[in-house]
Length: 405
Ligand SMILES: Cc1cc2nc3c(=O)[nH]c(=O)nc-3n(C[C@H](O)[C@H](O)[C@H](O)COP(=O)(O)O)c2cc1C
Ligand code: SF4
Image 1 (spheres, protein in one colour):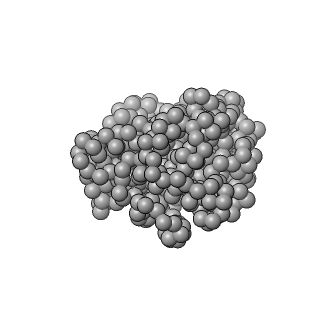
Image 2: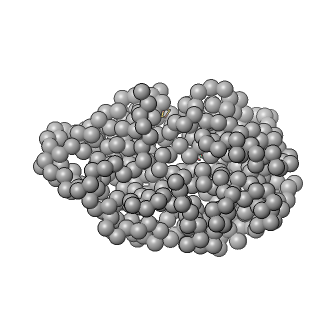
Image 3: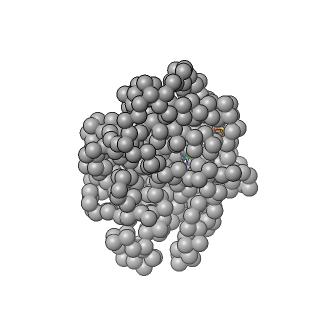
């Protein structure tokens, strides 16, 4: 169960107040009607806003829009837009929450994106809630038709090329990164894949302008962002906060030893440091912020997540076939107090070997987590090597789906 505290940190922009889903009438009353028909103005305002993608990489949205439109012109193929609502990261709930509470904001953004790049087909890809979104679509009279796509519940389903491949009739597994999806994606057409939150921001930027958008956040990192907060003993919360806000103001870190910033492709940071770190698109990843209480073992938590990530890889490329399972197995050794042999050195070496070598960024994200765990939990690792674990509570903390048999 996810609870909402949308109005604690700023006046909420994206999520319907009170946690009540907004139907089309409520949506239009709240935000005003959407005006169609001026793609150049949408592109210009998007560029001025500095909006970056909220799906993980923080890439400037305007640059991707222009790249897809250029590819469409070059290849003389009508481009396609995909709203990425997969949110396959187990600890993340922000996209599902946004789609449930403010579906029309996402659908507005999807229309604007399609019109801006001249797409005639649009898709909204989700793991959950497809029927609900089809009902929301049925209330609208959109110029560009939208198909809701039900994705398999796998970690890789939300990767851009896996999405394009699945929509084209193939498996939901990443393809070779060359040519990129922006040039050849859904049924070989230039394809714009944007996270659903990115599109919701676009819907507001088109209504209220770039200057309004920039009234939240910092000059380098404008706007607000949705975060999923995990604090042990409390319900999971989705909040909206401006970039630049210190993480400690969002995530209670008293009594915590570390924070996981970004999710399972993210970074462990010692709690005292994390409290001061500003929210940034550079490392917010899937928007997950999780506090690790001092009595829990960060090495054991990381080992569980790594096993999940290794099992979820598509196993198509060397780094995932050979590297991630070995790293995950060696991390399991580190998680058990006692002799560790060469596990630590092996993990560091393998992490260096797999990074940057996969067809997608799954190995890169996984090794980011690994490296940060080796640094942040260095003291715990020394204690484990001496046969001691100082943790007092060994119940699993971070959510990891049950393994498939
Ligand atoms: C393994 C993997 C899983 C991903 N899963 C998601 C996801 O669930 N949702 C999402 O929006 N982006 C996901 N991404 C990022 C997408 O590939 C893509 O960059 C993003 O949807 C682009 O949208 P944005 O620019 O608006 O952030 C994933 C990337 C990788 C490497
Ligand atoms: S790097 Fe891993 S997850 Fe990505 S395509 Fe290759 S095998 Fe699949």
